[in-house]
Amino acid sequence: MSDLPAIAIMGASGRMGQTLIRAVEASDKAVLAGVTDRAGHDWIGKDLGLCMGGAANGVIVSDDPLEVFARSQAVIDFTSPAASLEHAALAAQARLVHVIGTTGFEAHDLAKFKAAARHAVIVRAGNMSVGVNLLVQLTRKVAAALDEDFDIEVVESHHRHKVDAPSGTALMLGEAAAMGRGVKLADVSDRGRDGITGARQRGHIGFAAIRGGDVVGEHDVIFAADGERIVLRHVATDRALFARGAIRAALWGQDQKPGEYDMMDVLGL
Image 1: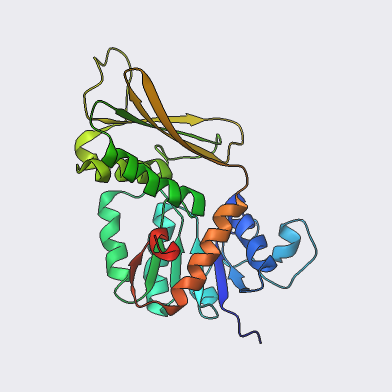
Image 2: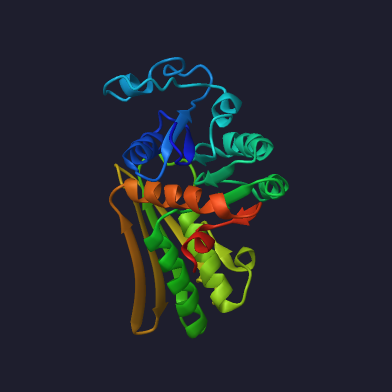
């Protein structure tokens, strides 16, 4: 039996799930404990390797998270808000590190994570990329340095299958800009423009979402004033970068006390 931390992957059949599985299998710092998918999915009860188009590997896709959690030290979860909330309660019972890359949560969902974090380590972030988290820090610093003569717009692009907008990363960037300005994002967020909207309000932080093709993720933070613009940008071309960050978070969490953390904590930022 390996002494390496065993990591479970939720949502095995999804594009991110498969990317995570490959990343764990390729890692020399962790092993794959097992995988799950939603009840009724075609992969349930079948060999994971065969389902992913390769050789059989003896890992059977399960629809029972508790069964998989029993042999895990950490779980990585890029699924749906409802599923991640359910997994958080189960992971807390099992005292696992729960790394959550799911986005689209409502404000009332967050209290449930707080309850689970009393018993387990939860690392939740809208983006697991090292580069994006550096961009968040830069956004906060630039926003703090510029006054409201500079309008702030967050523009994000993703593939046609993404179901939430603005993206979790865009909201992270908006929160960082608001923090730099010393305001609450909820008070200055402009997330919908259609028809005759009137002039842009001074001090607001605007969001625009683009959906199409197979775009992995592109995020721009634009600071626009009369006569000049500053653009901070991150472009993701491979989902593997999110998987690497998630695995890093799962390993980092092994040495932490129960509580809620994010990638800034993992990266020491």
